[in-house]
Image (cartoon, each protein chain N blue to C red):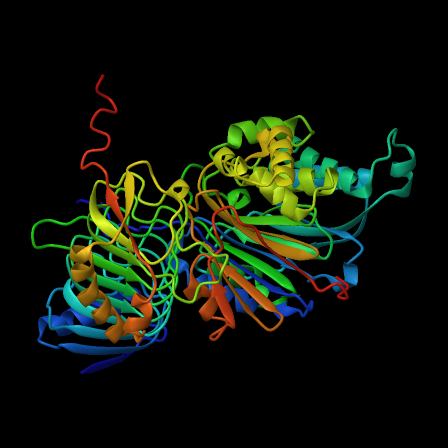
Length: 246
Length: 366
């Protein structure tokens, strides 16, 4: 295991150390005193590489990441898992805006709240099914233009008057599926979204994912499952097909 | 040879704000540390700071910070100041030249008061603040090569072309102590990177640092011009400073109401509000339609008794707030707060268009 004290280390140097070490066979990293260093894990390959991060990592963590596991023992900032292809990111705190933008594979687990534009344009293809599970609440534009994959929003520990998701929920959604643990007012959603109860197939898909999430984050699976979920799905795979065709 | 720099810098501006609600004065070295953590959000074409509480000995005077392109501009301006105001102290702003900031405009500061006779001769009931605003507008628009970049009482702005940590060292801001500090790291997109165009933008005790673009600049500018403001600094953010002066000082709106006018709710949200609120917000949108700020922004503005952080209506720029004891911090990135406050009690991201208003405690004299 490689331990790196990142206090005062510029992101470019830090990421070079990590990339070089991975290239020469290092599998495990423990980064301490991280604060604001950008681009950690970006484009990194190797499904057996694991990086523990102590401190708040900077923006664009795990962008284009292809295999490794990143564990953040803190909050994270914006743009985590942009276009991520494979691997896993676990954040033991809250995170910022625009997580999982165009994410196309792998898993992103967040314990607490997330910001605006999370899960925009997530996509899936054949065996590539990106999964994002958020323990808290999400801001506006959650799952906007969603094209594939699975988005789960749990709203654990939220105050009574706090909505679990913001407005423009799933606007432009044309693929994938969202599971939300709470009531959704159709007013919040884009016109392209349908809201239904879960069926057995949904539960079969959701159950192992949430068990894995609970194992990683430390929530109680049964407690999470004790509340009602709704499923959001795209009414059409091509909602704007006739928008400019008269 | 190909000089193209393939290491593309991806950035937006960065900002930080710090306030002690107990009015405790803090060294400028703290905010320098926070904004330096967001170094990569800027590109070296602008950095700056605003600080409140830094001139306690002269707290009843308006502190003018001026930049001059040449001695001629200084001479003309000083003659104008002497003619229209009482100048109690004029001195060079202390600076330390460095490799990063080898040149600068001529930087001078003046502690001024409004002439008593000036008020009597006025036709209308013009306040001292109005006189000062007129002086600022005159100098910035009519004297070539002279810019007032700070004009409030017991506060001051320090800014220029460079990274903010370089500007901090240039002005030696560690030698100033303030109970509110704001800082900015600039990445100019649409407008030139010049000394006057660095943030903060100020007028009287209003100061603003901003990340984003005010795409409604044209509408806002024309609206402000109807009230006598002259927009001279070639940058969209300038409208926000003057808008705050107009809405809060001159029209008497509370900061929270002014913020609703600047980033008002969408009509579809207003339609779902309780009747009272619906009427109030509708009236505000109708009266202040031209004050509405469009485009992506996060800004922090300071004034003598407080600091406000706010996003645009769909949150196209980042803003994080944290608190610990009597301190409240705002920044573009959480790490910039953690850099100076390692374990805050609470950290959160305000919702779109939601103003976070932090005032000094009532019993604190500023």
